[in-house]
Length: 66
View (spheres, rainbow, N blue to C red):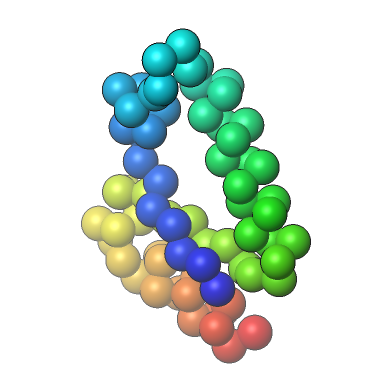
């Protein structure tokens, strides 16, 4: 399993010169598809979910218990 935190910063001030939001979203999708193709499960969470970590913990348990 691969866990990944998602925040909005990567869709704004962290852009490479000339990069737009659509470019970042597409690159993220391609990267995640490659991870899944390698046989990994991808689990994502956001700041809001971390504030109420029970949501993330429940998803982690479901994935790990298979």
